[in-house]
Amino acid sequence: MTADGPQGFDLGKLLAERGGERYELHAKYVNHQLPRMLHTIGFDKVYERAEGAHFWDADGNDYLDMLAGFGVMGVGRHHPVVRKALHDVLDAQLADLTRFDCQPLPGLFAEKLLSYAPHLDRVFFGNSGTEAVETALKFARYATGKTRILYCAHAFHGLTTGSLSVNGEDGFRDGFAPLLPDTAIEMGDLAALERELARGDVAGFVVEPIQGKGVHETPPGFLRAAQELLHRHKALLIADEVQTGIGRTGDFFAYQHEEGVEPDLVCVAKALSGGYVPVGATLGKDWIFKKVYSSMDRVLVHSASFGSNAQAMAAGLAVLNVMEDEQIVARARHTGDLLRGRLAALVDKYELLHEVRGRGLMIGIEFGRPKSLGLRSRWAMLQTARKGLFAQMVVVPLLQKHRILTQVSGDHLEVIKLIPPLVIDEADVDRFVDAFTAVMDDAHGNGDSSLMWDFGRTLIKSALRPGSSSGAASSV
Image 1 (tube, rainbow, N blue to C red):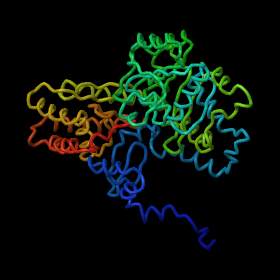
Image 2: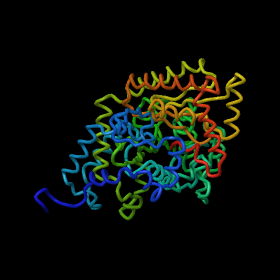
Image 3: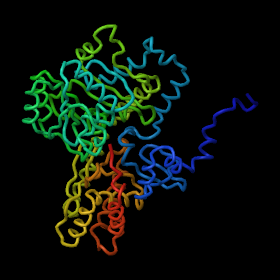
Image 4: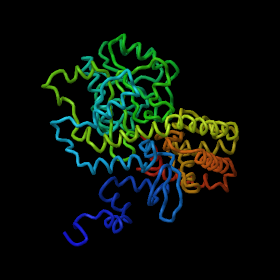
């Protein structure tokens, strides 16, 4: 101790002294390809602070966040209600994670979360989306006594081994075999679903109501019909709402867009954290949980060391409070309809713009082959080098010229995905549409003077080099 207080770790001092080394430290000690990719596409910014849907750099420049940390920042960055809840729970000095008591916060959080899915009864708390999916896979297998899980082609359900087994993208799976013997079907293919169910070994079908990769909705009526088929064959419907849930699509859960759909298990995470303390949750029916935890001997048969910790529970409760008090779900629906409508109105204006789709504030902007000869030849040049380069060409000037952070919706896809904080307002919509229009004007301009196409040539050179990272701004 000194007159100034206890000595020891000083976070502010450490960041002041070493914060400027961020990219070098990451390259040396963490993922060396991440800074390489960021340098290649010009995303190697230094952000100093953030609030709501905005970042600021050291020069005070404002950036609009249309990525939300891959959907984590649903209520915006550093929401004061969530911050206060975390300060309060730390100051309370609770006897947390004793493992042999029942603290009140997990029960209170589960009760509140289940109020948004009244057909479900219990919650398992983990720490991430992939853990929520792993829980659902284990519970479905144990509860049904069957082994195989069905999933959709191009799905993303996580990157740990179980969830990777139901990941529909080879790029994530390559080199990690053998995985579990699960089976992909095309989204919307009820005949394929019924054919697989007829084999009698299917425990469940896991599905994103809107796929993150490409932003594709399940066809109308598909989830309800799939549910009926699954239950007829004593299998479970598992809704992966890790990205689509917690208000993202204009309803609290995306499956609620379709009447009569009541999944047996629902996986949530991301936005539940408030952007602070990771939390994942698997909601399920009472009989499923009672089968898994069938005796006192099995009380810890599935658990997570940091699951139900007080900080995560406090953050989650605060997020749900904000969702209600600020009518976030209705705001996401209204703002999403406005943004999607204004972007869709540009499709007829720009021949490189193919389609705008999605729900709420989960929007996909797809680019496609133009009709005019000049644009068509430039498009073909990009496609030959690497599919997805045009979308990257749009993402980069949005950040570099307009200070708007976006993402490509998947590797080798000509789709940009918008998943901004749910608190964006009409001024943010105006800013994005104006910037996107300017980028499209440039893309449709003269090839020799277009900065976009000049950058495209740089991307082509990068794409043709071994070990290229030029398509790497895609997402989960």
